[in-house]
Amino acid sequence: MTHNFKFSTEIAVTVGDINYGGHLGNDRLLSLFQEARLRYLQQFNCSELSIGDDTSLIMSQAHVNFKAEAFWGDQLTIFVRISRIEKIRFLFEYLIVKTDQPQKIIATGHTQMVGFDYHHRKVKKLPLSFVQTIKAYESVN
Image (cartoon, rainbow, N blue to C red):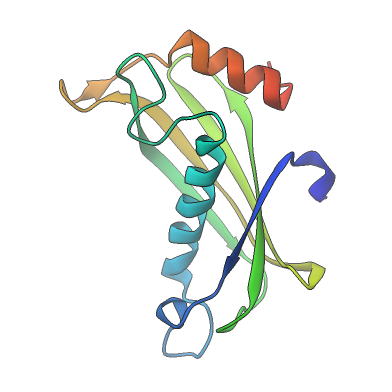
C-alpha cells in the first residue's frame, strides 16, 4: 500500500494531540495532514501561501477515515501524495501508520486544495510550473 507513495515523514504524537479518551483526537488528524502536506510542499520550495505566480492554496474539501487508535509518544509515519491535479485544484492523499508497525494503519484521508489569490479573495488557476513539477514527481496526468 505504501509503495504508491514517494514521500513520507515521521511525526510523534504529543500530549496536545491526546483527547479525553486517552488517544489521538479526531480533530488532530487534520493538523497532522497539514503538517505532512507542508513538509511535502517544502521539498519543492513551496508552501500553502506560495506555490508560485502569487498563488496560494486553500482547502475546499477534507475526508478522514479512522482505522486505529494512536497514543502519546507513538511515532507515526505519514505518507503523502498528489493523486490528481487539474487547472485550479488537486487532491492530496494521506496514509498514516505506526512507524514501528507499518502494517497498522491509523488513518487514511484526502484533502482537496484549490489555487487561491488571498489579495483578491478569489480562486486562481494553478501555476503551470507547479503543475508540471507535481506531474513529473508523481507521474500523474
